[in-house]
Image 1 (cartoon, helix red, strand yellow):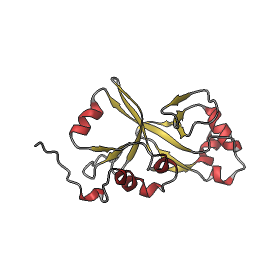
Image 2: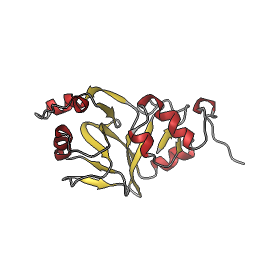
Image 3: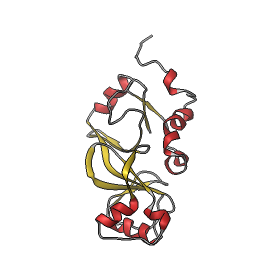
Image 4: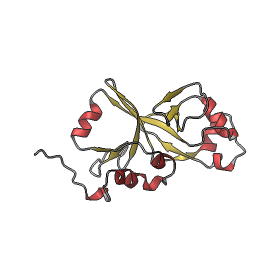
Length: 178
């Protein structure tokens, strides 16, 4: 996970936590996991001519995954089922972009744990490494508890707590060398 440092002022990423889905020589792609959009899942289902009779599905929040392709949906989830367009991130977490997973969620047959985002966060080759050198981000191991159980407004601090940082605001906003 990428945890935005307090000095990161870009409005797209300030106080964000981004789950990195893919990172390689061509760049990186991730989904922000703590930014609430104006939509609920029922709104998205309606736009896709789908519906659910399940209140918890209709009321589920939709997150802002990042500023790139904000019209495109992503479902970050615990592995369950076979979906048309999935990418396995780890043994326990996948990301899916196909409509079939939303249909299953609408019916109550989706993955046990999931979150839906619109858009994604992307970095070109070497960009995230440069931003790390500039002290824009902290990195922390992925946490299913933070992804699926921690309230959105607590995820930034909870992600930092994994690293033993109790108050992110107290961290220095500059880089030094010894």
